[in-house]
Amino acid sequence: MYAKRLKAILTPPELKILQKLTTPQKVQDYLDTLPINFEVKGETYMSPRRVLKAKTAHCFEGALVAAAAFAYHGRPPLLLDFQTTPDDEDHVVAVFKENGLWGAISKTNHALLRYRDPMYRTIRELAMSYAHEYLKWNGQKSLRAYSAPFDLRRYSPEKWFAAGEELEWLVEDLDSSHHFPIAPKKIITKLRRAARVELNAMRVIEWPDPRTKKR
Image 1 (cartoon, rainbow, N blue to C red):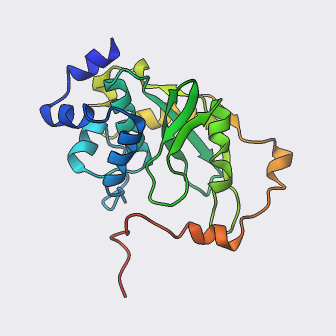
Image 2: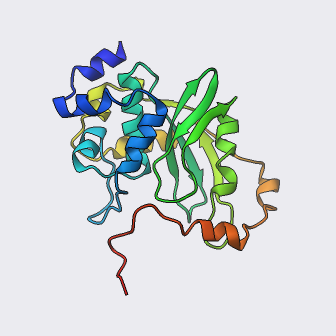
Image 3: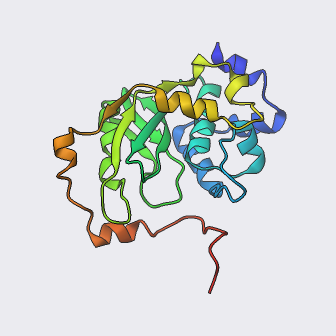
């Protein structure tokens, strides 16, 4: 059983945290307490073990912690990858199912692209709920594709939960997994740009960037 394999490698502090995260809501609440990882010292792809020690995470790292909590409590540890235009950033969430419906855990610093309650019948429905929120500062809607649910049980817990090195290999595996287009190309070219009020919502952040100088 995968949960047993994961529990066997946990340290007491890790065990204390994960055993409390019994529901998706509690997982999201915990991730919301972690400051955003602004990668001040360079790009990171930390394992859950490193995140729980550092107490900071960006979207990929937060999704892995959520997946670890799911695995601990017997749920499938599933990731969902969003691919964008080349000039925007991809996003990763952890997905779960309750009463036959899909929801998502999302670590982000913005008011958009956040937690999704389990009320979507398919992964496509869930993915599409992010499409109109995925914006660039020029108003362009930039979401282009979403992955199938990516099951971390294909790897041993030691490989992704406890790794001391950056998980670049996992990012590459996720990125190269099968993805589905968010819409046909003829539709993409005609998407309406976001209104100013929508762009203003993007300015709402949860954690200030320490690299931003105060005036």
